[in-house]
Length: 204
Length: 144
Image (cartoon, rainbow over all chains, first blue to last red; front, top):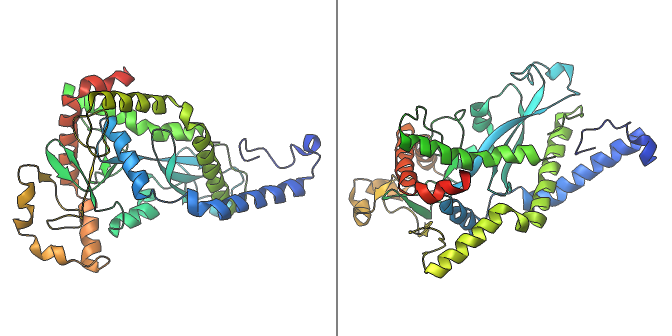
């Protein structure tokens, strides 16, 4: 049901459960999972975990990077007519937007779902709790620094695609990679950035 | 993600979160077999053999990060500091900003300005390009 988006009344014959029972069981299961594990599994990385992320990304050539950030649209099939305009995305479907940060193993370190499908990456970022923490100076931590090209920085970054604004928090690809140096940069940046794309490909 | 079939946004959000949690649990159980993990183990063993690596670093000629008490200059995270002038960073005219209380309006305003600084973004891209170009040989190998 959760993995394949089946209708509630489709597995009633081989599961021998009624539609209402399956509906209620799915609701209880999701609420149980979220209530029990959301505080431990959908939280910011601890300092030890952050050090591990930084070490791994430094080995990939991106010191000071704590993950790849990206958004995707989750199509909403049974949308409410009253919300149709708000959740109308650029492909003409109704969807909600998911923003997430993940590492090389597609392990999620930030997950934000619920923004209307009419939002683009920048709008979602503006309403994301993570960006609110950044604006408040709570995240990323101030006591960790890294050295890049002979300069020491403290603001840890995310790899992002061209849809994200040109903030110091994000390492987007070069807009015009007209030299070998910039093309190599874009190649490696894309390799790290695609972690988030892989996450959306393997998530149920 | 498969099309959602719920009629309320709340259930949609709950289901998405549940899927993310289950995904994380699955990754925790299976990540030892990932190619990335195996590559990391090889790099770690290679670094150990060559006796390279500082504080938490492997596979490189410098430490991945440093942990200290916070920025010595001004600002929330502070501007980039050259290694040559690292010791003199406190005398660059930002002494007044060191006393910013965490959570104060000035602090949050400074944090927002620093995080959204476009010039800093392009300076970061420039430094990253230089860094990657200097080490492009080993870094590009997994992707070519």
